[in-house]
Length: 297
Image 1 (tube, rainbow, N blue to C red):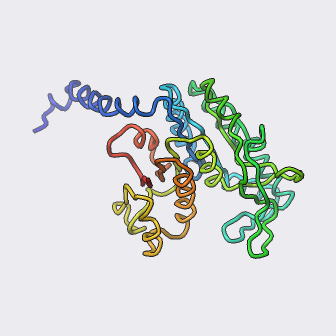
Image 2: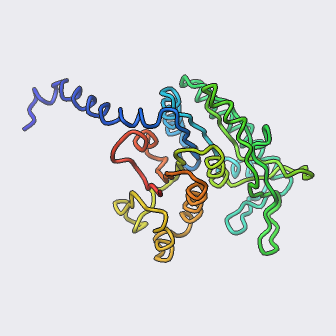
Image 3: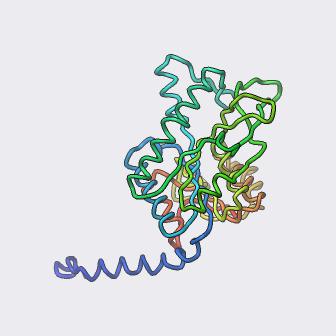
């Protein structure tokens, strides 16, 4: 039984920390030199403390030799800026209607403000980061989305990924930070607003990444959405269709799972949906036996 002497015994803390390091060591070795694409957004992006915690994780991964690519969205920040200028946010079937004025604001918020804010925090935490948009070096090319005759404005789907700029930065031990604005295909002078989850998955495929991780606002895939303890930690890809038919995967989780499927079908062996609201969830996933969230493989 714990008494006052054992409670204050520093050896207990030492033993605990030693066991953590021993457990993590094989994972350090496993992931060094591998590419991991992290899609970052949601509440983890709005809360300043969580944002710093995520960047600390990213810097640590990079410092030990893991090639990390950070792809970010920024929907809530875009909404705030649209409100500030008195422009209504419109969504059609879950996609933001993006007229010319909205596109200018999207580009300004994602590639201007948020991208550079992230780079700044990484630099402050001792990392080396370079901010990019999908337009830089033709990283992302897109075509206009048109579904059932509905006009979404300048919303695009990625048709090509040219990852050479990212590869060059990774070789020089930089952390590429990518905002998901894409240029049009040859002959199309427009820029397009791209879904960040989908763009991240396609970048992961192009880079032949070992892992694709989505930081989200939920614990992962739950058998019961009202019960966090019903988390499904591992799902083989062939089981996904059945879970969708059962209604276990539904609503906003469907597009996240679909992005995992894009990555898996493109050759990425492991995809993860983890809770970005949990401080250092990325480290828990990468370096512990228990992991966190849901892995689809």
